[in-house]
Amino acid sequence: MMTTSNRDLKLHRIVIVGGGAGGLELATRLGNTLGKRRKAEIILVDAALTHIWKPLLHEVAAGTLNSYEDELNYFAHANQHHFEFFLGRLKDIDRQTQEIVLDVLRDEEGKDIAPERRIGYDTLVMAIGSTSNDFGTSGAKEHCIFLDSRPQADRFQREFLSMYLEAQANHLMHRHQNDLNIAIIGAGATGVELAAELHHAANEFSKYGLNSIDPKDVNISLIEAAPRILPALNERVSERAQKELEDIGVKVLTNCRVTHIDADKVWCEGDLQVSATLKVWSAGIKAPDFLKDIAGLETNRINQLVVRPSLQTTRDENIFAMGDCACYIPEGQERPVPPRAQVANQEAIFLAKALENRLNQKPLGQFQFKDKGSLISLSEHSSVGSIFNNINVEGFMARMMYVSLYRFHQVALHGVFKTTLMMMTDLLSKTASPKLKMH
Image (cartoon, rainbow, N blue to C red; front, side, top):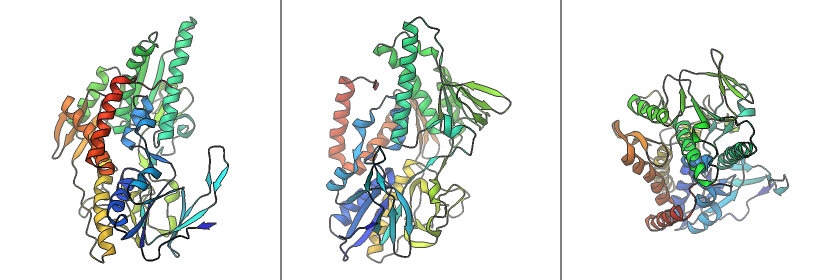
């Protein structure tokens, strides 16, 4: 076992585990303030080498976004923003010695790259996000693709493209052409956005040589157990989104609880069968299973770390949690703050100030979530949603607001000037490159 040995004992060490939207933004903010002034040592740990904004994964899966062009390299970003990056997967937390334990690091072929390692901390921030919750549904793990990470989204894109190429080859060889059937289980934001993006991709395929397949032959079924899609949003937004999906040919099935899944079908209560070659599970989230009661910390039924208003865990004031892996229920409310990117963003802003206060022995303060609303992308030309006090927005204006969410994330990481240059580069790239990833 290796332990980090080059620690500057004069500096308070803040270790952030998880480089998602919240964790990376927090590391960047702390690096630009405490790290740059040598007031603290900032370390970010993640199991991947690169970051991509999770709300974009449905575009990666459909092939309408090239993940290799939009990804951010952690090592390069850390060097530019005065913090350190460690590649590794969290295995355990040793609260007695105040160290995290990273598992053995292996490459794609299973070869050991680095042994089990320990990293000491004075303050630990858990920001490891969430994974899909299949609720123990039979066949879900075996037959569905989950969209929790870029590799999973890339896998879906490859299988989606392969399905298209196989159908094209069968058509050219005068074989019987089967419809292309795709089922998406879960009509929350990810499921709805993926359904719309796949329809858009089906139309784009015909422009790049796969024109023997009518986009109408791509059958997309969106399956939801609740009475309506987007159950977390207001009814007006839900109704508008469903109408737009149905207008483009997506089959929306509500009040449809999935019982089991096999290689060719999704089975729902009442013996309803939905044929599907390609299946995606996007119904519900949970924190990673290894977090359950990790190091004796308090967790809830979906493995989230229970935190106080300061975002400190209830059983250890030196350990904080944020984002999807944290459960914070504001005083007087029954439900925890929702697992959204805007929550992670607001928590990163709060913790950047709170942890500086902690170094200066000042009160941390209490996190207060201000809900600015939700926007749902219905592909490149339209969006729907509600902002502030349930003000409904839709169409082009909502689309522009949706796109701006990603730009605000980029500003938090790179600043206004660099983000402006990136926007100009993206605009030029879209005019010169194919709109669909074909490999």
